[in-house]
Length: 115
Image (cartoon, rainbow, N blue to C red; front, side, top):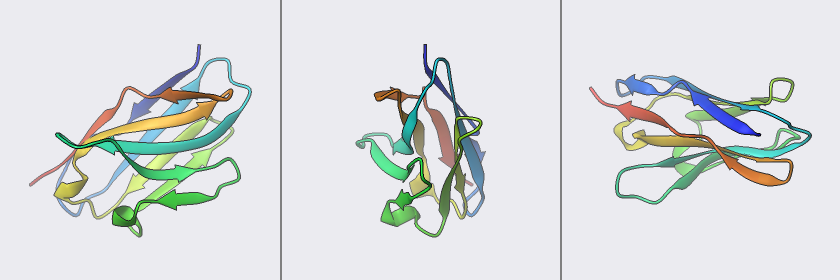
């Protein structure tokens, strides 16, 4: 059974940094796109950043220049480095991946930006 397990969330002050990790495990023979979504209270889930197998990345405008998505294919892991965090980045962050041509989601990790 395929699983995605996230880690790295927490409380950080405005202007600070966090690094999220998401590791895929189980019977895996292919991983396509890996991406991060977030959902703030009362808002819809939104795509934050995506990376395909070849390394091409895509970001939502509000995080460009502050967030960096990367992946380690040998470890089946995707990362999200988040710098210059602001209160507007507070949300539950979810990892998503297309594994064996099916969609999988992580359980979510809370990121809170507050002084």
